[in-house]
Length: 68
Image (tube, rainbow, N blue to C red):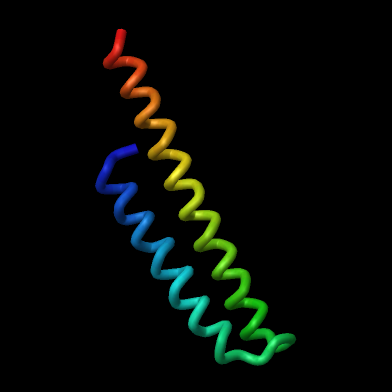
């Protein structure tokens, strides 16, 4: 994973999590807007998790290849 792609993806994940988190505080539970915002929050968290796992795996692979 390129470092620039990782940074952009992590930026998008942070934006999604922060924006949807703030919106969830203002929306009424049970409304369609609340459900869509909650789904967006989950997508942002999933994207962030994928980026972090990708970075960890890439670093481990580089460390293993560099150490040989």
